[in-house]
Image (cartoon, rainbow, N blue to C red; front, top):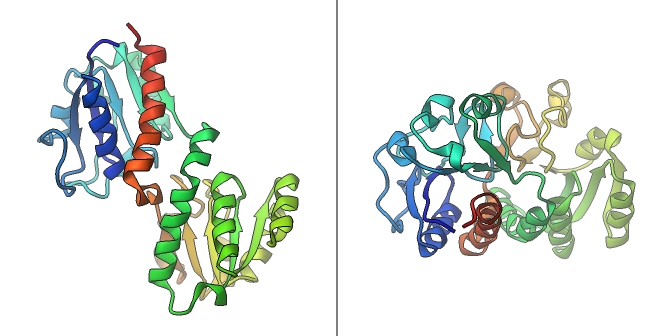
Length: 291
């Protein structure tokens, strides 16, 4: 593979691990939006514009973008906006943009600047590979935010994909009561077999009402209706979905609910999860930018 200029924008410690692996391959890597993290493999760029100037590939984090803002909890200055103007001084038409989930504005920018977008959101094997670290990261947050042992709570888990399965298994292992709400009838049966109570997706509000703590894994803002917020008063709701999340977060401040939007839980084991993400990125580079 030819040496390329690769810009990494935002993210967390996983992105530093990806940068290390790309540098080992001989690429020129620039990093912006991680300034609060120590020991970067190369000095941080002064601005996002400096990072992407002349870059063939731009990498944004797997948790996706909210509006145009990149997930960047460790940036010295936020938000970092992934917009067309930022990409005009690049060579991205020779490479592309790699991220978790794109936006409508980026789709339009890709048409105007003629570059490819590679999303990882539908790569199920990545979700499975990362599911245990997400579950461990969630467990840490739950322990920190509760005042009883977790086995004393009833949890509802909304969505039963790879992440929902891993979370359910961890909670059941702690002897907590778990209610799973999912559209998938195979998933409902699997949940029952491992010891959870299974509800159909249309019964998700009932599942939430019958639990103490709600964990949403579904990235769909229709998952929890604003009109139902009052029915959930007093409950902790942990939304771990990537943007747009599973709730209308713009209205959360007035809801009276105890809401945690816990993005980036895959940072629990940044070396392990960074290596997983690097494997996907290397596959993309090998496919679209080989010798």
